[in-house]
Amino acid sequence: MGHGGDVIEELTADHKEVHDLFSQFADTPPDSEDRKRLANDITIELVRHSVAEEQHLYPAVREHLEGGDTLADREIAEHGRIEQLLKDLEGRGPGDLEFDRLMVKLSTEVTAHVDDEEKNLFVQLRKGVHPFVLESLGTKVRDAKKTAPTRPHPSAPSTPPANKLLAPGLGLVDRARDYVTGRGR
Image (cartoon, rainbow, N blue to C red; front, side, top):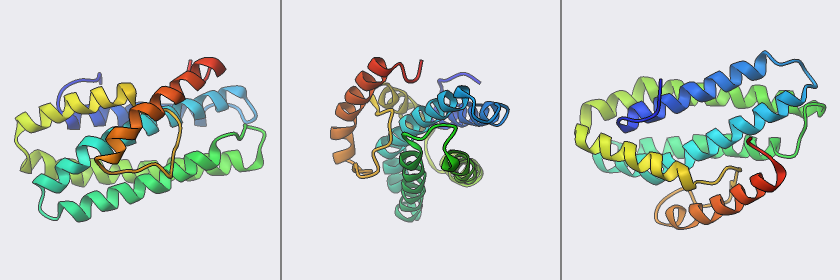
């Protein structure tokens, strides 16, 4: 599935990419440097995805869905747990005893989050939000991912307007660090 379309199609494509990366990780031998590269790729995709959802999807959930505040708050809390796992993973290599344990926990958390989002939240969005709004959100999410951070920043704000102001700057710094270190290539 390619990227494009409305916000649900865009985010579902992200979910598939991350699932594929976790599958590749599981198929890679222990202590392989490919595991670190895949962990970095997973981190980059999850952080960009989360930031875009927090900037655009969850405000729309609050605005358009009954009980939207509660739904958005729950999703953001799940993101916080995932981002903390990513931060705990940062700097660890495949030889570290905690590396595999953190990756299993991360995979479990992400899979549960994705399943809930696709089976519940996306269904409610499809029913309760005009297709034009969903298309517009898809464009905003794609644009946000272009400038989003690529590393976990658990203490950064997760709601507008602060997250929309800070994320592009953090993203610029992260991408500069990634370029210098070769991370994410």
